[in-house]
Image (cartoon, rainbow, N blue to C red; front, side):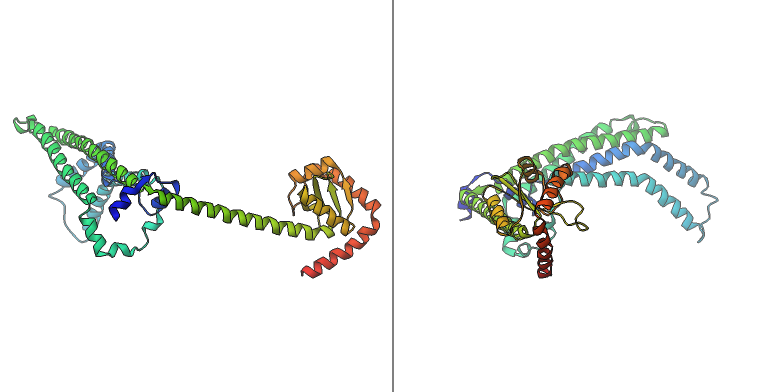
Length: 370
């Protein structure tokens, strides 16, 4: 049955499937890449610090061996001598260790896309399943990893043997040389070993990651049924979001219609737009938009305004700009202050009786809301 499922996976993985798998830590990665980065970091760190480090070690060696006959091991001198040794070791090793730590983080980040995979940290009971454990032990992936490990062992041994054979031909092993030549030989041999080892591991890491990438891509493939189900879920989510947006829009419209009776004026287009404004002296710093609508909802605003005798003023440009630039529940844009002030001044002069009743209506509305 499992083979049939694998054979039926003919569709490329969707973005959602890849994202979910990445969050669980299922993506192509090769430990050999981290090894290569660590070797490069160690090689680079040694290249930069080996000069100063060798001078520090040489100075300490001269000081120690030059005073060897006069040094006394006592309880009060051992801590100081040990501290000097540890400080020297730290100066020599810390730059290399720091470079290796940064290299390990970069190697992991390059493979994970520098994104966190928190679900990997969680406890998974499937990992304790002995049946699944035996399946992993005898799986094709384990055999491939064993082959890669064997390739690493053979390749590294072969590279080091070739490098060592070349070094044995050095005059150091066949003729007397100066003591300073020994340091030069150690430096040259170390760098030669490192460079060949890095080259060998880079090839192995490329092969390993290429296999892991193809395997991950194949494992992430989907059946046609899985693709259909994912589309259905996506459509369902879209429908749910659409229903929530429609519900929010209806609630907003309900709130806007409930605020119409307390408006100072309705500015209209006259048929396409309608905007309800409110301004209370001492409360509002500028006129506030209570409601706005276009077409059919604009007609509902005007009908409710007529029912409660709210003044209606036709001003096409102002109504259009209020609808386009204004936000319900917020003050009008500053560019419209003068135009709206003229409209309010007009309705204050022509509808004095309405504004006398409006104070009472607002007071009752506020008390009912409380």
